[in-house]
Image (cartoon, rainbow, N blue to C red; front, side, top):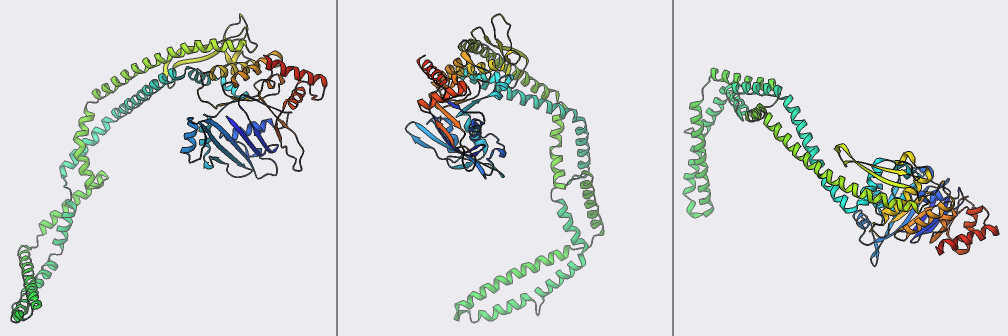
Length: 564
């Protein structure tokens, strides 16, 4: 339920503070007084896109703050908290604060529970707070999707569960169709791929590259190309280590001999002797290894040529295939397996096709279950709306919901849902958009909402009707007011109306009145007391709120509707 609305610098409204109540709230006022801006302020809180031209001339930004009261278990509470906003609790009720800033230039800002949020959060939140009906909604009600959605909403959990089963099967079916199409594309390309794989196998097997072979060949080539330099370095190193008179090994032996003579007198010198012996041993090992390598070292032009040829083969292979050696070896390792896969694709295609057919059977089974439920609830909805239309001065009208099977399953089922109306006795049923006038559409929409609201379990939801009584008057207007009041027994209803017969049924009557100020804005949005209400109804009836006849008529109207 919308409890409070504060509006600043929006359209012709300079500043307004509106308190709404439970039941039916009527919002009235002269043309141009600002009723539209009051509705626009609610659209802002619902996350709708609003033109910055709506900002009052001379103001920097329009600001709307709303206070909503919902049941503590409402999904709206989780949406606010998940967005980082704060929620106040009063017993089993939750209080939600929403704010929207619309600058004259720049980006709009939105807040829930004092926390900044994207507009998408406001839109998600509004689904659990407010339902708006206006002239544009009449157009939407003519669309097949809106009619199907209304029927599904009426079907409640029964249809919701059936839709869930159907949608799961639909998603699987679509995935299998895509998989089969993708596989068929692969099969069409399999001939080209097979030739490429066979060429790869032949080419690579002729060379038989090994992992790490390039690095090994490079190292061998460097060694053979610089063999004289290597031989000289090794020879000189051996001489430096093992020369009889002044080699490192000889000098180390001499140092050990000298120090051993005094090792008993100093423990640290004894440790030095041990270290020198270890150095001598390691140096001796190195000298022996160098000698061994020298004995094996031999210039081999033929071997060097063979290495160069092998490296050239590997380089050509990589250039021809356009990939590195490691990738070539990996591709070859998997080539046989891939050839086996594409050699006989028919079995794989048959398996996928079987899965498609099995899922299609499940899908149509779920679709038929959904169809039966839609037919059942469509008949029920048609009867209940027809009853409501009779109470809205359309006693001879027949409302029907046609549910027929489509040729093929679709995302939302196998049904074509169409609302039909026979506005007069004996007239045939026609699609709603072809036969209903604007006034009749208003009543059909209201009748639908009254019926649908009977199953609403969420306390605190708000319905907003924006001049759905356009083109209506007299007894029909009284009927609409009565049905809005009945809807208000279950939910909060806000009706923007120009008809006194509708406003008379309100439990709270709010007016928007022009009021001069230095800035030229209006500030007078107020809840009327009994006397003020009579005057406003008199104005709406005759255009003269001070006329005794109009006042008497208004007073009689109030008495009659509240006695009924």
